[in-house]
Image 1 (tube, rainbow, N blue to C red):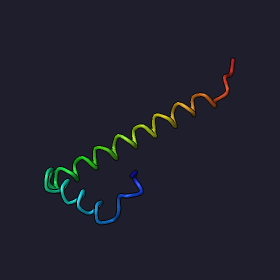
Image 2 (image 1 turned 180 degrees about the vertical axis):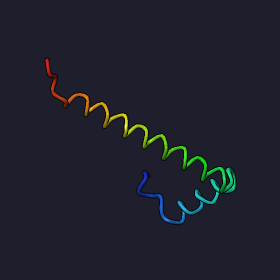
Image 3 (image 1 turned 90 degrees about the horizontal axis):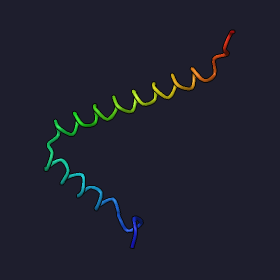
Amino acid sequence: MGLSSIGPGSIAIILLLVVLLFGSKRIVGIAKDLAKGINSFRQGINEDTNNDVEPKND
């Protein structure tokens, strides 16, 4: 018994329960906030790596 025992029917039931508990509008809001956080994290990583790569002119 592991994750391999979760089938498409089980996933559909879980998704239905999540929608019933939180509502579709709240799920959309959470997804938007998560996407903004991921984008901010990626931008921070890119800025950090760009700062490390730039040569220093003394």
